[in-house]
Image (tube, rainbow, N blue to C red; front, side):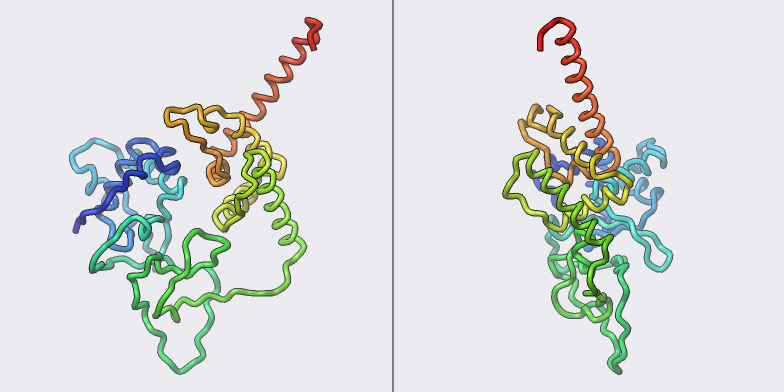
Length: 278
């Protein structure tokens, strides 16, 4: 059953939203009406097309492309529970306030190791679903979702190991810190903090296969991109590390910007030498 949802004014200027095509934005809003009160919807392109665009001639490939955009921009997450796939709106509990919520679909399970229950007490089901968080127990260092606060969390308690870091982990941590400090210097954000979201994006960029120097180059490229530095209709600066490392498309574009600027500067220097002006 469809539901009334709220659209906040800041939706229209969100960096994540404006990175999507207009059709993807409209599909995103329409999807809210058909999610359950946890922001969860079955991952079916046929179903969402029929719900949001029942009389329009959009193809399933177009719908799939829109959903992919939303996932790539961290507006949706896709997950599987008992061989069924679902989409969940990532910022749901921050932006939607629902009285007497009801839930039709399961929430994502933690991918961490679940501690076995050796007690004689029967594990309780998750009871408190009215928390301001999504009710997902996750390691905060690897995801933007927070753990559940309140009662009924015995079932999906996750093991957190406190063993000493390996050499590779220490190197990874040092590289993450180096990238963050480079961004602070280049973008002039000396008071910025390396929170879990920024750390996750940097780590994700390394996992995509980019080197330390390539990621520094992407930061440099962003700092030289006029649109991101405020030369846009809104006169706003878009320089956060989460935007620069949002996905491979963003990283590649900023690296190209840095390379093009370096080439332009090199050509200009050569021209000056040839004309006797240095």
